Image (cartoon, rainbow, N blue to C red; front, side, top):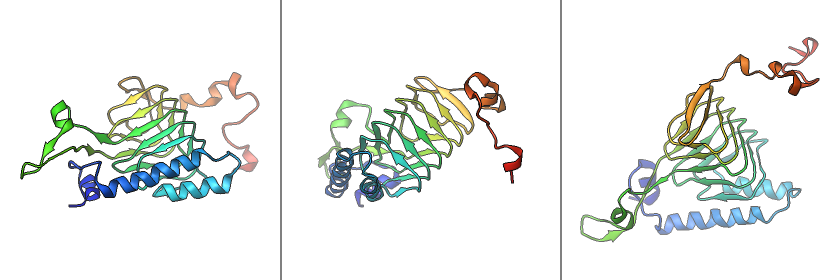
Length: 218
């Protein structure tokens, strides 16, 4: 069974498999190429990201630098914004919805290593041949999510639509849609509601509106 198939099945695979190493080398090189660009080289940057990811939605932007492991396992929706130092270790599939915003230093990780040190070093084929292996769990981020700085999303986690994840959080379990969650380990603080509207913060809202004027509404 090919290593990519083993990853998809969620079973042990060898990260040193030649096919996987070739994918990672390509992704790492593209990441380095992106990190050498200037911010106003918009066409060049867009072309690299389209080449790097399985899907990179219209209107999306990543500040850079970036550190992407496979690239081809990551699907990013429309109007995504990723701030400085975005890391995606996408051994397994990573899916990010539309209209998500990530603060600086965010990381998504999917690989899992055996807990016992001897098994991290080696496991064995049925014929006794030793090999180093790990496994990976997919990560899914819904649409309209905002992650503060230095959020880490761990393997196998799903974050629902419309969530806010506080800065420095380590997300080890699923977060239901519409939640504000924070901490290490991350936990749900409360459900977001209409009371969170900026209209209740006039000192910050100033002259701005949270909805278009009546005459502009369809």
